[in-house]
Amino acid sequence: MFKIKVQNKWIRAAIPALLLHCSIGTVYCWSLVSEDIVTTLNSMGTNVTKGTIEWAFSLAIFFLGMSAAFLGPFVEKDIHKASLIATLCFAGGMAGTGFSIANGSVIGIFICYGVIMGIGLGTGYLSPVKTLMLWFSEQKGLATGLAIAGFGLAKVIASPLMEFLQDKFGIINMFYILAVIYFIMMFTGHILLAKPEGWVESHEKREGDSVLTIFKNKTFIGVWLMFYINITCGLMLISQEKSIVKAIGLVGAVSLISSLTAVFNAGGRLGLSTLGDKMKDRNTIYKLIFACSIGVTLLTIVTKGIVNEYAILVLPLLFVVNAGYGGGFSNVPALLSDHFGMKSISRIHGLVLSAWGFAGLTGNQIATLIVNNTGKFVDDGHGNMVNPVGYQNVLYVTVAMYTIALLISIFVIPSIKKVKRAES
Image (cartoon, rainbow, N blue to C red; front, side, top):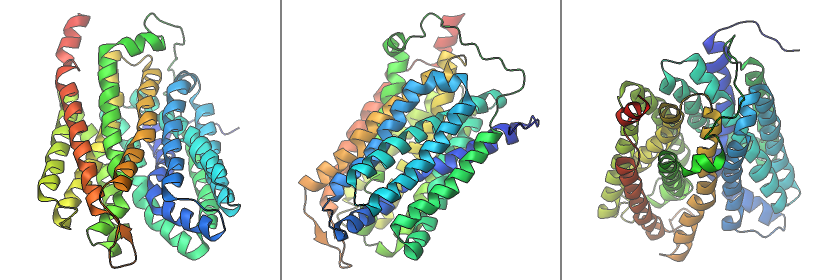
């Protein structure tokens, strides 16, 4: 019905990937709406805490990872059905979230934002990745960086838009309007997305292709753990970003800083993946990400930046962690293709994304647990209750985890030279 004959890597891969990822990346605007969802529900007589409603975001990331892990072979087989499912689930879940808020249903929010949108996130995230690497075979990092940068860039675009829509029409109608906008964007991407003409997908099962065999592979385990730790640490800070910004006295700049961190997130996705293309061993990127993240986190710990309201030190922490978080995502597909080849990349990439799902269940929940049980909440002078000591304590856990990830990168992931020697 919607057949397009044009065979161009930008029209059939890059643009549709951006349309899909710029839509689903809106999930990272959660911190901008979570408090308002709680306020709206409480005003309607549905008593709920912010800690409870945070599970909607956790579930969305969990189902993102799980759907990517289990639907990898399906995406390999039919990217058009996969991208259509992504469109329907994401837009439908967005609309359902607005409907659930309107009816005071916390369970409805969990199902619509967490489960349904989460499935849309997983299939939408995975659908364009292999297609991009096939069209941009000599610049795989740049190709996946383009799409995955869109996931980070979504926050830059959506943050002011969501604030405008919420102020103008209220949070419930904001979800309805966004559902329509993202349906149009994603459906357009779905129509345009196509693999190169003449590419024939091999669906025959090969030795070593089973999930159990893949999870026994030392390199795969190392990549999975690095990915899990990087996302967990990133979510621990990203989920508290709005509160941290308020704690360091920049209440009026929340939206601006949210957009800036999103720029660093998107920039890390595109810049670090492009840099990876120029390196002899793409794993060097991960060593750089973890070393820089450890450095800025230790600096903020030593200076007690959040407690002492040293915005000049805390902002670089948020920027560097966001850049490393994004760069960790965009380099994974190419790193996996270097070690495992292209034939089952969607399957293997999907299995690695299961780490994202588990990080979604642990990242912001660990941060919330630390903040709620250490330090104390105080009024920041603008009517906001913040816990600077609690946010500062989150950093001790992240720096320890980043250190473990760096050690894995150094000692567990083999260099590409060793891989090539083993193959020859």
